[in-house]
Structures are given as C-alpha cells and as structure tokens.
Image (cartoon, rainbow, N blue to C red; front, side, top):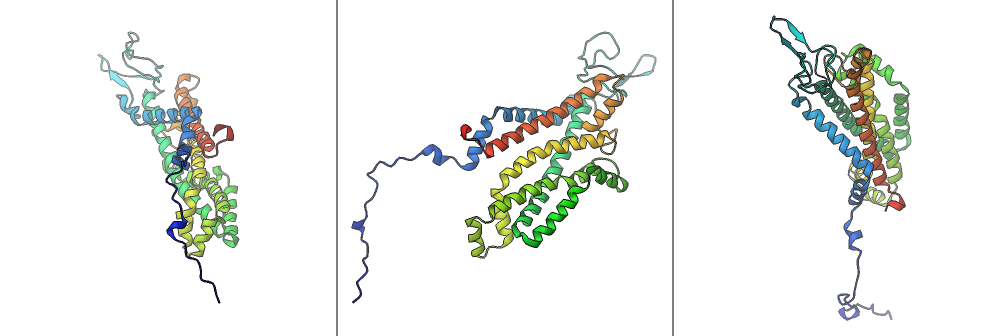
Length: 329
C-alpha cells in the first residue's frame, strides 16, 4: 500500500522577523554603472581630461562670439586720407598697448598674414574639428558595433566572410582611400567625414566581435535561444548592453584619432580648405608663415595637443573604471 505524501503545514515554518539579519547596505545599493562612475570620478587624471575637454568645447562654441570679427573677416580701418589699413601680422596683444593704429584693439592670439583674427579662427577651427570627430565616431560606432556583433554571434561561414571583408578594408592605406575620394569628391568637410567613415569602424567592429564571442555562450543567451527569441533581439537587446563598456572606451580613444586624422588631411591639403578653417588648415597656414609670423602656429598646435590629451585621459579613466585593479576597489 502506497504511503500518503506528507503535506507541509504553517506550523512547520518559522518566520525570521525576530532574528538580527545584517545586510551590507553599501554593497547592495551600488549597481555596476554606479561603481564605474565612482571609480571614474576618483581618477584625478580622468577629471583633468574632462575639464580640458569641456573647456575646449565651451571655447569652441562661445569663443568666436566673444570676438567682433568672423573667421573670414579681415581686420581693417580707413584712415583720414581714405586709405584702408589692414591689421596684418599683429602679434598677440591686449588693447591700449601703445599709440599704433591697431594698438587699441585686443588680439589675444594675434592676426594672420591676411589680417584675420586668430582667436576667432582658432576656436572656429576647433569647432569644425570636434564636429567632424563626433559625427564620424558616432556613425562608425553604430556601423562597427553592429557589424562586429552580427559577425561574432552567427560565427561559422558568416563570420569567416565578414572577417575577410574587414581584413581587406584594413589592408588599404588611409592615404590611398583619401586619394581616390579626392578624385570624385570636392575637398572639404565631406571628404574628411567619408574618409573617416571608411576606416574608423574597423577597430570598433573588432572590439564588438571579441565581446560577442566572450558572452554569447553564457546561460542567459542560451536560455533566450531555447525560448525561441529572435537573433536580432538577443544581439541588440540582451548582449549589446553587456558590451557597451569596452565600446565606450574605444570611442573615447577613437575621437582623438579622428581629430588628428582631420588635422593631418587638412595639413597636407586634401581636407578643410581655406578660407574655411580647421585645426589642420590653421597649422598648415601657420607652418607656411613660420619664418615671418612664428606665433601664428602656436594656438592651433596647443589646442590640438590639449584635445588629444583630454580625450586620452578620459579614455584611460573609463578603461580603469570598467576594469578596476584590486587595490583600487
């Protein structure tokens, strides 16, 4: 005769309300991203980078407004004889410096060989360089991230074909791509953006693919497959949020690369062309006049160096915050 199964009753259980249960509230209240933010804010070098980048962005936005002249305007006035006098090659000065015709003007960065205000041109050029960098990196992040995640998720023949495409694209020198584009496109901002779009997504795709290969065999991904979730849902809804940290770090390191690439292309004459100005075109113009107006090349070089330094400090801060060392925890 089969025994009757025992059915638990309320008396078999004891409530734990009377016991002293201690919980580490500090640990329980910290999410992953909150911990990343705490480590990032404690990093002094990262905070220096944030300050530098914010200062340059604010000056790029509002710096030209603080001047009475546009980046194309030639500073001049008409004397008593009706002759136009142009402020060519004036060294950096503050107003009321002397009795000369332009000594009552303020030129913090001086004027160039044509009499244009270097303060306005420098910060307008920084604005152009930052716009090019941010636009290209955002688009490259979307393209590279999607490409790498899809390649790593499906694997097999799909991954093999997609990685051969990456190898071919990575083997073509950037100058060759720019030279071909210069045949079919006018020189300027559009050419620089297209050139960066064709090259900068490759590094992003490699990072995304590596993260996908690390994550795709974990339990929650296998559970989603078992329950019949669509591949695109698994890739972009479940795996992508867990790969965003290394991708953000890669973005922070890619921005100074894009800024330097724009400066280099403009310096060699295939990027931003005068009278439009960017950091690279200003350095090129200053280099051409370095023997007669040596001060002219200093502002764009210093701004370029600070841009790259600031973004690299931020990138290092994100990398250390996303994978903190044991002694920093």
